[in-house]
Length: 253
Image (cartoon, rainbow, N blue to C red):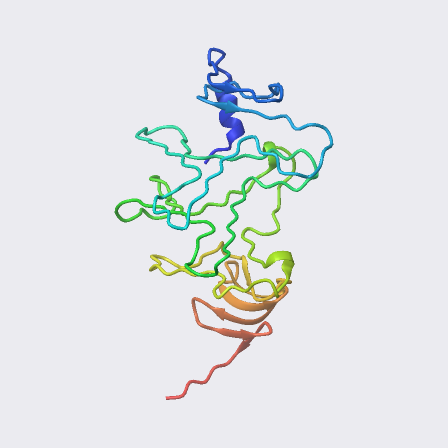
C-alpha cells in the first residue's frame, strides 16, 4: 500500500477539487487541512499547554445492556471496490511525528473484566478465492498482515526499527501476564510456516548471540554464538562441522 502523503500530493494537484460537509467545532480551521472532497471533515486544534487529558476530535460512545442481542459496532466503515485501479482503503490512520513525544498511529485496546468467553484484541479477516499464485508473482501477493518499513517522509538515512513484532507484558513485568504460544500457525503451510531471508538469524535469547542461520555463501546451516559457528551442516553434502572443523561420521548398520 502506498503511503498517504504521496497519494494526497497527487490529489492536491487538482485545483478544482472542492470540500463539502466541513464541521468546524469550537476551534478554528487549521491551515494545513487537506482540501479533500470529503462528505464530512472534523478538525480540532489543540491549545497551548493544558493537562494530559484525552481530548478526541471525534468521539463515538455506545453502551450495551446485559440482555442486548443486537450486534452493536461503535464504528463501521465499508468500502465497495469494484475498481481495477487505484489503492483503495477502507480505513487509514496516519500520525505525522515531528516532535519527541511518543506517538501511535493506532491503538486497539480491549479490557476483559470477566476472564471468560474469550476475546480478540485484533482480528484480521482475509477472505479470497482459489489457490494463490507463487509468492512474488505478477498477480500480487495475498498478505494477511503486512508490516512495511521505511524512512519518514521518504528522506534521511536508512531507517532501523528495534522490533518488527513485539510481544511483552505490561511494563516488561513477568508478573503481569504470560502467553501460552508466542506464535501459532494452525493452518497448513504451502511452503513454510516460517520463512526469513537467507543469512538472517533465528535467535534463542534476547541478546541475539545464540542463534541459528543458513549461510548462502557457504551453503551451510548452523548454530552460532555471535558470529562464531559452533555446529554446521552442509545442506548439499551433509558434511558436519563442529567449531569450524569437519567431523568424521561413522554410520552403524
